[in-house]
Length: 117
Image (cartoon, rainbow, N blue to C red; front, top):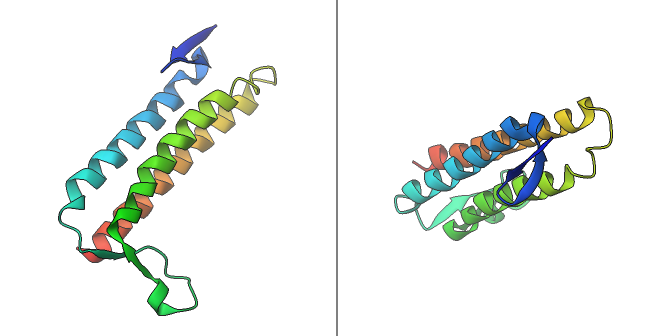
């Protein structure tokens, strides 16, 4: 049995992880919208670059976090249709790893905002 998730067929046993992903992506977007006006014009994005002058980017680059988050959610919900014919554990692990990726993106954005606050 499948159930539609924003016009994409998702198996009913995988409905919960993809709803969590959508909520996390929405929360990430809301968090960025609320904190965007308080941010300074340049923000640190990466700390592992060789040149310290490359650490800072314009704050508009933070918009990539929600875009990537929604792209992963919708891309994985479309990709899960190809995994539906495998054993039930494979799509389930894939769906919950999608949730983990969303949470990591959210934590990264929160870390950036906390550092510059």
